[in-house]
Image (tube, one colour):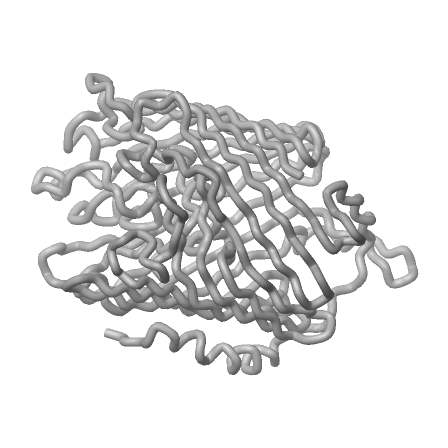
Length: 475
């Protein structure tokens, strides 16, 4: 079992920048790019910039929670999710930036309680502070930067740390982040605590006992990324989660790596204009990505040893609609013996799971096996279509089936469930996105879950459906 102090990973951040600097590559060649359009909400030569977002989503869910046609629960319903954000950035100099953002989130026409997280509800969170931070950085003059305050933490594909923007609240952290940037290398070191949405009162993190449990959560880490190693982005990370409970303690680390091919890395060589400027590569041809993570330490007073894997490949055809066909496999370890005093269930941390394991959000990256086949194309410049097929199994039926939030379970863990088949079912997703302009977009989707043997072995096993329509206005 590995023990670490809550600030240990941050303490060695200064050394990380030096140790990784050796792999920082030369500047990328100049590419032909379009000049950015003027921002109508930028004032005083960029001193003050305002951003605005309004998003409205209608959802309909049927059997997503119980897979039972005979029982009509409050979650077998439809509702509206509304979210408004307004932010202000003040850039007083090249190295000093202030940013603050407020958010108002509502769940409308739902029979569920308007309390965030209760019985699956997203609930109401009236006008509140989403971000408020100060950044000291000018990477054209110094490789070092510092960001302090309430902010978004987002790394890699967001399988472990993400903004969770599909959710009506999203996710932010009260955090201190130190950044080192040099050439093709970026290293972040951070210490943080996740912000907890509350229906009444200001949203707070555990730094201020935001969920009133006194768990004193500190989530810290080092995350390094470089594009200097071949045709890919290569990342390494070490993450540490510490929580004090009343009678137990959580203190474990997550060590991992992620690689992802650069867009168009295997496309034909781009043409040059003879002056050292080349056209950007088309994002066509073969692509790949992989992520693996290992965890060790203590979870709620019990030894933890777990791991998770993701691997995917795809091919984008060089035609007008840029069709891409992909296949991927995801695995999160489960606990084979809940009574042996050791936990082997991978802990999904703070992800954006909605992007990966089906639009219906019935799986997280723990105790699962997911075979995915996907197809994506752009019939027009403004329209994007995507279809996904998922086949799901439990990694171990001696452990629970965990939903996308990594906490809620689909069925109780009983002797019947332990003896059940590990095949959960299939999910098919279809989505369309239409960008009217850079400021206005529409999106819609339909998903169907075909119940498998695990559901029929443990109770009701009716199929489930999910439909949504969404519009976003962003400035």
